[in-house]
Length: 338
Ligand code: SF4
Image 1 (cartoon, rainbow, N blue to C red):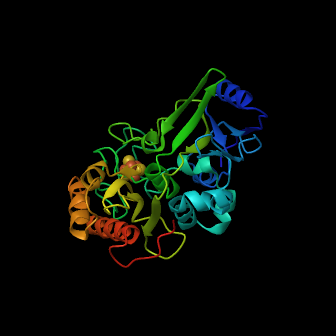
Image 2 (image 1 turned 90 degrees about the vertical axis):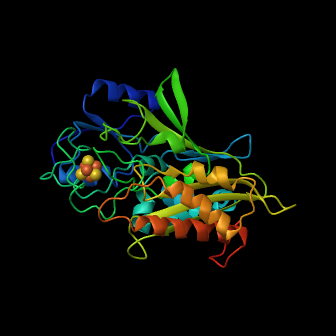
């Protein structure tokens, strides 16, 4: 690991100022991804600005009945919060499907969003990788890409985003709060927080230089809404998604039709993939399995699989159809927590 300086600011302003005055600095929270990448030589910050002692570790009520989750709330604490468990079951399921218990105890909400791809070539300095070294090429395209993207990729990068939590946040219409200075705060939709690679795969997110993720804002769920997160992976724990899905479903009790649905895929694209085509087809429809399958297929028709990852398309289709059926009560499935 290369030598680096370490600073521990006591306020957001101090942190942002430190970033502005230390070229090559990186913010540090739990460090579960960044420190690993530093050991590999993939990340070589000159300075680590430790945010873990800032007062960003609270979960507080919002006036609309939603929750504000501070950026340094650990994944374990978020998953254990009784309000989160009651209102956002898909988020809890996604958190508990991610990493190991030990990692969840340290990993933070903000860090989870900002974690980098687990593409093996990104972590291997001996291989070309446009995300790590722009313009060097993409070793995965003709290499081992079984785990890579089928949606939203580009000629420059085919990596997937590894977060489970971010998929649930996209389906829950969460927003991410960013601090860029005393007069510069903004929020962006969680579904728009991560970028598609296009010809700049080195930019994972829409975060501007020096901005700090300070919180995630969860809107109040509509009464009667049910949500579920499901994940397919190579082993039962501590593995990234081959495909995953978060569904938030609201059925009209009068006629059983879909009043609203949010569907997001993980493991398929460089960012959580909001399936807006499928959502539009399902809204107002009866959630009959054939209707659901047609809607999901309309979304997945856009997929462009590579040599070794076409299996993800039927996997994602079955996962989405079964998850919606479980929530709608139209097919046996795992219990849908309300
Ligand atoms: Fe790098 Fe992206 Fe290609 Fe992986 S898929 S080698 S991260 S450019």
